[in-house]
Image 1 (spheres, rainbow, N blue to C red):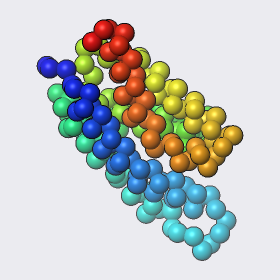
Image 2 (image 1 turned 90 degrees about the vertical axis):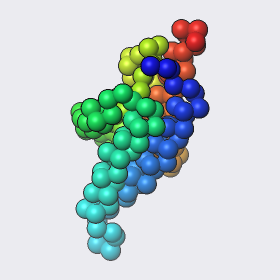
Image 3 (image 1 turned 180 degrees about the horizontal axis):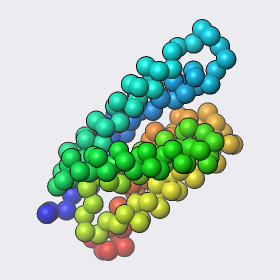
Image 4 (image 1 turned 90 degrees about the horizontal axis):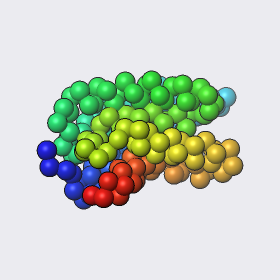
Length: 170
């Protein structure tokens, strides 16, 4: 296969991020509503359900736009990784934002096509750094963390791929 051009990869990352933002805000609003003692807030179920229903489509968009050779398998693997990584990280970090960044980032590693010079390990390090930034930001500047969180998972993968390409001299 011909390697992806940076323009195609970053277009996929941009569209994936644009699809992630409403899903992220919907899930976050539902979680906050569920944790709130206020009875006049929105019902959390539909908000969380909407956000979670968008996630497979954003992984599908990432796989299609990055021209993944095995799109259906990549989307299923991305969904499984999202759950397997996101739930434990949310439990360990004791906040929903960090778990969403880690889980969605892990899913993005599977959904975005990797060329020969790209390594899942470098991508995982990129997502781990983005997650660590969010964990620290949630504790020091929660408003900023909530705002920047949906921009980080796929951007971290793109930056990690760029680092791998620079190391390989491509």
